[in-house]
Length: 511
Ligand SMILES: *[C@@H]1O[C@H](CO)[C@@H](O)[C@H](O)[C@H]1NC(C)=O
Ligand SMILES: *[C@@H]1O[C@H](CO)[C@@H](O)[C@H](O)[C@H]1NC(C)=O
Ligand SMILES: *[C@@H]1O[C@H](CO)[C@@H](O)[C@H](O)[C@H]1NC(C)=O
Ligand SMILES: *[C@@H]1O[C@H](CO)[C@@H](O)[C@H](O)[C@H]1NC(C)=O
Ligand SMILES: *[C@@H]1O[C@H](CO)[C@@H](O)[C@H](O)[C@H]1NC(C)=O
Ligand SMILES: *[C@@H]1O[C@H](CO)[C@@H](O)[C@H](O)[C@H]1NC(C)=O
Ligand SMILES: *[C@@H]1O[C@H](CO)[C@@H](O)[C@H](O)[C@H]1NC(C)=O
Ligand SMILES: *[C@@H]1O[C@H](CO)[C@@H](O)[C@H](O)[C@H]1NC(C)=O
Image (cartoon, rainbow, N blue to C red; front, side):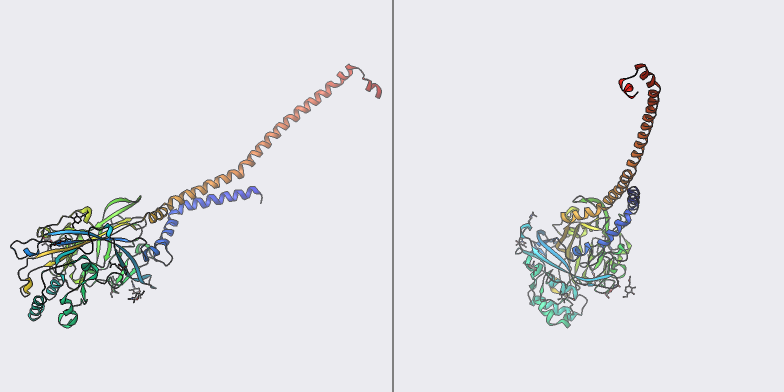
């Protein structure tokens, strides 16, 4: 093969590959994306998933109860003052990771919290006055037990000097815990108290720091077969539903909050499982935004999470017993029977009946709503803020003397924000991934252009040479004919000239 035909083939090949790439760019992009987003031991997403590279930020706000001495007054309303934020850095990792043959992965979650005093408004030694959670829970749990048990509990509460409120430090309420004589009794006589809650101390996050024992075992789809199932929770604690809620409210749906399938749509709400609520909760598309230059969809916590069946009839099963007005979810089945209720902070979006019974609530959607911002093509979270408030139900009890005359109030204890935002470094990588289709298009169009150039290189010089050669020949022919003509002209006329000049001496010599 000569140089020319090799070049022709190369040109053809380049143009062909370029055209194929242009046509199949999406397929190739989706292939690369799926490969990197699936949970496999080597995928890009796995290392980030296994150990979150940046710390999450946790902010806690306590409600300090400033007028407990007015509790028995007519028309009593607790006065609550928000304290905080107490900010922590949270490091999250997945432990006890097992790859299963059914394309799922089983794991636990381990969190470590470090207090960030510089960015906190207060110290862990601040003292807070709030409802006494231990006595209140004991009274609530035993409310349907025999009058003997209730009588025993009532006198135990009095003997151990329990009050309706308790004052402790933030440190004790959060992680360190404080001893309570009731807990000692409960651990000593588990048969009498029939309590599943057995701990020597009480704290909202007691023994949860640096431990993987508290959120349960998650079984999540790796998405190997179908990218639309990436990160979907298949089982929690080895069951495909939550025992804390009946019917569809106990169904385990959606992600665990860190992996979402690619190709998110605005009209498809997000489902996410929350171990704090023991149920899956829904997020509805709210608006578009941009995080570090990456466009994203904001999904906000749905009203249906805290609905009692009024706005959405499917949520009737949220009640788990008596219903409460809208805006509050009863999670007592998820909290060893304690009278725990979650709402958005400051009773945002809740029935005003709750905040009317207390002083100090000031809901603000900017500060208190819960949202998830996803990059829609890849489903990668850009900005997440989980926010909720823990409330305890204070209500009168005829048989427990400590609670004989208390009013019925859903009492805010604290609220909680856990947030994380993509780092500039990860955002750069994500931008590169998102730019791949454009880069691919440039590349494939470039190949086509290169093909054209090679074609030009292969054909133009030869064509030029041909043309030159033809021109040259043409000119040569012209020259040749002119010369022939000239020569013949010369030949015809030379002799007479010569003759006319007469014989030269050379001629003469020859002659
Ligand atoms: C909380 O309220 C109590 C009164 O109930 C008060 O003595 C205490 O100083 C308050 N704590 C803070 C940190 O403001
Ligand atoms: C800090 O906390 C106090 C109450 O403890 C509050 O009055 C103040 O506004 C808070 N400051 C900030 C910046 O949040
Ligand atoms: C999880 O792994 C840790 C060590 O990495 C081990 O101590 C613990 O027992 C494991 N937990 C379970 C439930 O397997
Ligand atoms: C997959 O297998 C694991 C381990 O055998 C099991 O725990 C899990 O429930 C299974 N998941 C599904 C969706 O079948
Ligand atoms: C949590 O545990 C880590 C490691 O054990 C420890 O360094 C840190 O101080 C603990 N955080 C809190 C708030 O107790
Ligand atoms: C949940 O598990 C039960 C048995 O444990 C099974 O009968 C049922 O089909 C499962 N449901 C789903 C949606 O996988
Ligand atoms: C909350 O749920 C528990 C357990 O499901 C139930 O017994 C109780 O009646 C409910 N309480 C209220 C006030 O709805
Ligand atoms: C549900 O909430 C609405 C609005 O807060 C309230 O009027 C209604 O009584 C509640 N339903 C039940 C069954 O309690």
